[in-house]
Image (tube, rainbow, N blue to C red; front, top):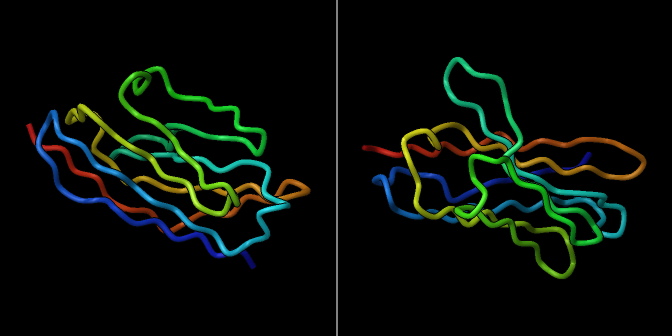
Amino acid sequence: QVQVVESGGGLVQAGGSLRLSCAHSGSPSRTIAMGWYRQAPGDQRELVAMVTRGGNTNYADSVKGRFTILRDYAFNTVYLQMNNLTPEDTGVYYCNTRVEPAADYWGKGTLVTVSS
């Protein structure tokens, strides 16, 4: 069983920055992609950003230019650098790790609250 652990959430004022971290216990060589999803109260979970084993990235339109997903060389840790945060970015942020052949593992989430 692959363990996924997030950290770095908290309370920040609008316009501020936060950096989330995620580490998984699986084999980096079998990791296909890692990504961040968020879920606001009353909403469905949505993709925020993801990075593949080959280094390709994908971002939600709402965070392009403000958020950056970074990975370590071994690909067992990813970070989400969030700048110019707005209250609409508030939610629980979940890290996802996809491992060969196509198994998804999720962390328990970390809460990000952006005050206006």
